[in-house]
Length: 96
Image (spheres, rainbow, N blue to C red):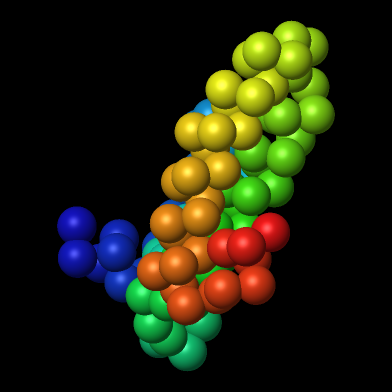
């Protein structure tokens, strides 16, 4: 097991589940063998996840057909993004 972890490249998540493709770069960066290729801090990881969530949220919101569903989705997802950006001290995106 130890040699697999240290010597073999992990299987990209999209090979196991094609729906994982949009977040694959984050997972693979977390699993990188070389320290300098991994995230240097939790804040860097949070930024990439926040970017993914923001992009995913905007795409899903644009596909929403009901105005009622749209406002409800915007309320809940917007609140989550707002709190995440506040945690990152990114006030510009929190206000957006």
